[in-house]
Length: 236
Image (cartoon, rainbow, N blue to C red):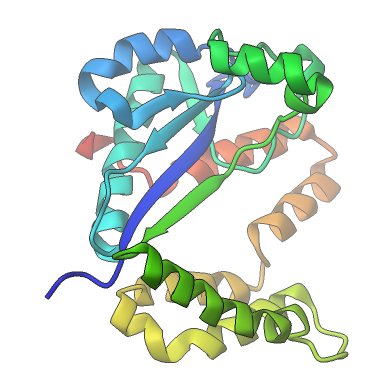
């Protein structure tokens, strides 16, 4: 039986100096070194301080979990050899987009020319998850079904005063009956553990750390440590 869907993942990381934690525009050097190991699975993005890794097209979530674990470890190992480290976070706590260098590719030069500061200021880092289905007809049918649920999700609180943590918890309950079929129970349990952690989410802990120390450097070191916490360099 063919898989009901396929999955592909792109992850964008900050490249920082391992000692100072400041962004480093080293993507071209890293690409030259990484090509023999990662091939087309490592790419540049708009800024030279960003690196992106891409999975293959994968049949299920457990396979995706394992492949991304290996890719992250290989990337971290390459950066460590260059005195760099990874940060996985939406943006850098101290960086200014005005100080960042654009990657030296025609596509990004054209984007900068067309969008000006909108393109230059894109100092953000994210993760993209792509879901593939069998054909266009299935895709249209699926999106029509998803669309019917959007009003419920957009007003999930139904007028209640509901914290983001509680809203996420209720959404996890809402999808719980299908997560085993999708092979994503491990990811759902991880999210529940985050929600139940008395220290709060990663964002909560970052705010608490800054309030306690008043130090941006301490916050940057925290992000570096958290990023590397689940990356095993020995499997690279």
